[in-house]
Length: 396
Ligand SMILES: Cc1cc2nc3c(=O)[nH]c(=O)nc-3n(C[C@H](O)[C@H](O)[C@H](O)COP(=O)(O)OP(=O)(O)OC[C@H]3O[C@@H](n4cnc5c(N)ncnc54)[C@H](O)[C@@H]3O)c2cc1C
Image (cartoon, rainbow, N blue to C red; front, side, top):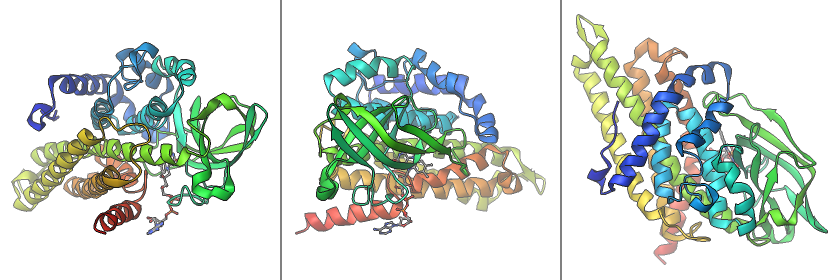
């Protein structure tokens, strides 16, 4: 069990206090849920909403709406701490509190904040973000086919969204759709959709290899009627909201990866001390020690870059991101974090031997979930494209 000393990375005691609060809360209340979530694909709805009582929902929402009033760096630390003890629930928290709510903190109107934030902060609402579609994954903007046509005081949405975290349980969703198909990626807008809106439905909950207690779904918009007041930002400016949101998501995703990776190292150290073969603990064998040393080195290089990016996106302003230095560096941080994390998870299973291959072992759960760190919020290849494109642009 390892709690990072944040002061040694230049963070202050408030950051440590928030990390510690989330860490203790997750240890006491969320860790015990992991097994059932994985075995039964169970989403602990009540336990999710109860996190509001500990101040762990609406972290970046201004205090006037019932939120924590903190910047996104604090949310990153909350995410890391939650991921250590229950990475699956942490994924759902991230999708709601960052992908949906924090995006509205930066882009929502005063009316939207008043209407939705208090209920996100008290746990009445769970959020989700709907960007990906069956035909639009890596090319989320260009290939998007969900449309929104304005008719009087409403937008009528038609299309499907796929792989949406919290989709089956969300009360409120931030959804992207094309308002002007001719303008392609410059004709996208963002909308707040409530699950009770006419024409919205969940087509299916998807069966996954990891993150099994965090429900992922396919959503259908069939003449879904959305009031014009639920347009987020300006019409046809959704690409900016989406791209700057993705930069933040990538950094917070790297913090999330830290939580999982630290847990895998700690479990492996315990196992290396406890498990005996040839009459001694396997931690005595230098080949096992080499694995542990490499795991630690991967973890700490992830941590250094991730914490640095946490600083850099701390006060990212509205519309910033999606291009330039922060775009390049957030993609590089999550590219490294995803790969390093998968190396550590692989070694963790190796150290656990046959037990690591058993679905019931904690390390196996981490390993199965870890792969998504190289896919979600842009795959490794998309991250590489971003980094290379920005580097080449800079050097002109
Ligand atoms: C568990 C889970 C949860 C998710 N949650 C959400 C969510 O909450 N909201 C949401 O909107 N989305 C979500 N996603 C979707 C996720 O963002 C996409 O899966 C991801 O962007 C990749 O898209 P795709 O799956 O369609 O893969 P594809 O785009 O079809 O890619 C397939 C392969 O082709 C490669 N490839 C594609 N284009 C290029 C290129 N130009 N150059 C080189 N290689 C390329 C990719 O790297 C990948 O290896 C989630 C996904 C998963 C698995």
